[in-house]
Amino acid sequence: MKAKHYADGMRVFPLGEESGQPLPIQIEMEWVERRRQAYVNLPKLRFEGSEGSYIKNRALSGLNGGVGLFEAMPYQVEIGDGNSASVFDMTIDFTKDCIFVGECGIEVEAQVRQGADWLNDRAEGVTFRYLYDQNIVSDSDFVDVPYVINYVPDGVQLMLISLSLFAVTKELLELIQAIAERIADITDAATPVIGVGVGAGAVAVTAWDIGNIILAVLKLAAQIAYATLMVIAIVDLMNQLFEQLMPRLRYHKGIPIRLFFERFCNYFGLTLQSALLDNLDQSSAKWCYIPPKNNKGGDRPSSAPSGWKETGLPVANSTLDTPAGVIRVFKEMFNADFLIEDGVFRFERKDQFRQSSPWVIPNTFTNQEEWRDYSAFNASEIKSNYNIVYSTDLQDQNTLDNIDGFSFQAQFSPNQITNQDMVSLGGLEQISIPFSMGLRKNELTGVEIALRALATLADSLTGQLGSSSGLATRINSRLGSLLLSNHFTSIGKLVVLSGGKLAKNQRTLLSARGLWDSYHFVNSFVPINGIHNQYWIYQDQTIPFCYNDFKALESTNLVTTQSGELAEIERLVWNQDTGTAIVNYRVNRLYTNNLKVEYL
Image (cartoon, rainbow, N blue to C red):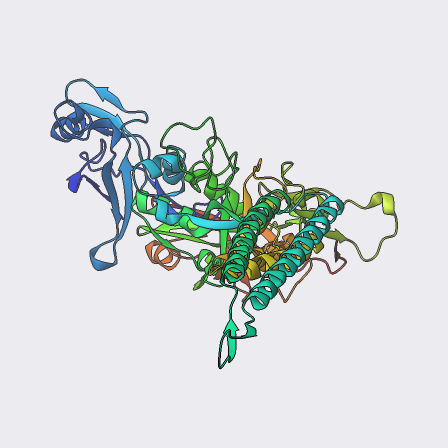
């Protein structure tokens, strides 16, 4: 079946086709190394005459207002006829092995359009800071993560609070007593004096000491004014005390994990589709990344240029600086994989790409010369120690003092052992997460409870003046925020937000054990919920293969064997000239029950 070639929508004939000889091509279907799609293996393409001139001029069009070398030319290879034909979208990248041949000849290479290799090339070439500069990422994408500083010596604090509370109480009692005395003075001065008039027909006369009344009122007014000034001064001192002993709630900027993917997909003209990422972006549990910080929340560092503002962008040279880094990090963290198909970028746990096909692998021998089957096991893939570990932030004492959920270990070992020194099971699979976990403030400390008593008193005092200071509310608002021992952080941090606060059960949601239970358990060689990772492997089996077989496998690698078992094709190379394919596949079949797993 002869393939048809199109460059920039125009039917073309690479060198060799004009003589009637088809260009030798292979169709390869690979489900490892992130390809997960069929693609064409083409030799280097050479064009002559008008076609060569057209493609050469397209490459040089940057000299006269065109796109030139740095935008690839669309290239399609069509196999089959009519509506059932398969079209492979490719591109000619003029920056790779492009050679001009004479006046009207050119040699070029074609690669898969929006394939894994293309994405890696492009995704390494931009940073999220560049996407921010181009308004692909905007300020509205960032989230405010509330945090409080929680490391200060409690003993000294409680002593200071107790002394302050005593002094305030004593001063208030004295003020109340003084005001009571002034009120008594007014009452005494306002008491009338009853006397007898002078002269004939004298009658009783009532008299008031106006001078004493005025004096008493003035004294009371002065005492109240003094009390008001004292209350204001006391509240101001308490504010200063609170800031020293309990720094106010601040905010650091972060960015939801899903938005990392959504924004680079926007830039590359892709549509994001991911149930995994959608699950991390619920209103009740939004997973967010906070980049390293060298500033107090909301404050401009002294070294920052004018116009600086805090963002949730990864810092330069960090693991998430580029889209490629984002894919690599979260691919490992969530045991995921990706696929680009028809302009859609899919990102899911790696086993979610399996789609069953009715296609049956033909029953041929793997070694057809000897009429024998050769098979092997994937035992070399098992590691006895499977670790998932978060990083620690040396700037944040919380990540050193509280290691809940910080690490998880699945230890695999045989159930039955005769000679321990002969056990061949070993090795380490380390999933290193380059972030630290956030720690949620769930309750008030003894210091904060003592401060709240003082704050309630201050609120009562200022309330009498017509405007409460709101200090008690300020203390209560600290609940649900991120705990930091320092305003600064040395590595990125993951948190789960719910509304404007950190979600409850923060460490459980983020925990390394949670990552195993949700994403990594499918790698276990011991069956878990009926799923295991033991495979029989069959390689380099030559089978008859035609176009209809290819169509049946275009979107899946999960097939069945002649015996009815499910098999996963890892790699298939179809040679159209011979009508055969060489296939590597594996069958999910137990080869031992002598394994156990222990969780540490």
